Amino acid sequence: MLYLIGMGLNDEKGLSIDALNTLKQCDKIYLEMYTNVFDKTVTERLSRIINKDIYPVYRDKIENEKEIVEEAAVQNRKIAIIVSGDPLIATTHINLLITCQNKGIKWRVFHNASIYSAAIGLSGLHVYKFGPCVTLSFWYENYKPMRTYDVIIENRKRGLHTLVLFDIKPDGTGMSLKTGIDILKQMIKIKGINVIPDNVLMMSNIGRDNQKMIYSSLDEIKNMQEEVCSAPYVLIIPGKLHYMEEEWLNLFKRKEAKEK
Image (tube, rainbow, N blue to C red; front, side, top):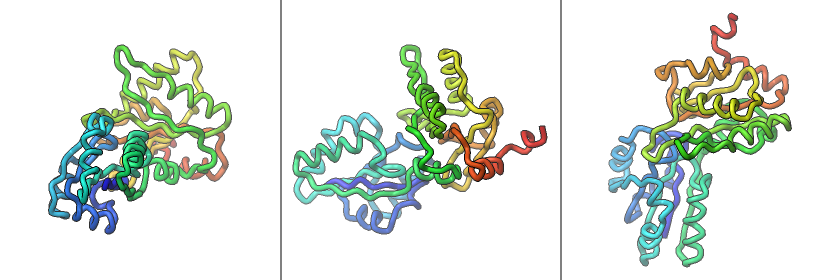
């Protein structure tokens, strides 16, 4: 038996009672550590709550799924993978379920809040006016993908909003505002066309006590001190705004920007 258990936006406090009761019955429990940025002591806290050992797991083990699937295939053995957000908003987890389904291994998914629904809802923008969302990936010497900006261009042409998720490294380190916006600006320079509006919405730590929302220019957001807000970040590039959408966004303009 394999359980995919969504932890929601934050930490172990987002787990449902049903999920906690199920975890207490599991033989082995993994906690995925690469799709969100959170306090690593969550493993210790959750372990105390359910009185079970928790094993951190990273992308390579999830994508090379053989070991986990073999564990779940053992008769009367229950394996759980705890995933930040909702477990099925990631292709690798669908792959796990496909493998289980093909091998006759039972599985169950515990859904939870996702950054996709939370960010769009909190933005105050109409969900049906969002185009495809994208991840802003880290750039490396031989890997500089441009798809993020291509999608933004297409969405803007259609008057649609774009949800841009800042990348997270395999060790759980989230992309900084400066790094993300520098990459976005390089994309603009390479394409030779700037479709970014005067103001975009930056959101950080959605659903947490230190949640931040700032509606401002890319340059002002880039220069914000990391002490003011911290990863994980998302940007929303607005498309054509309804007057009520604009009214909500304007509530989150920086004070100094309003005074200019």
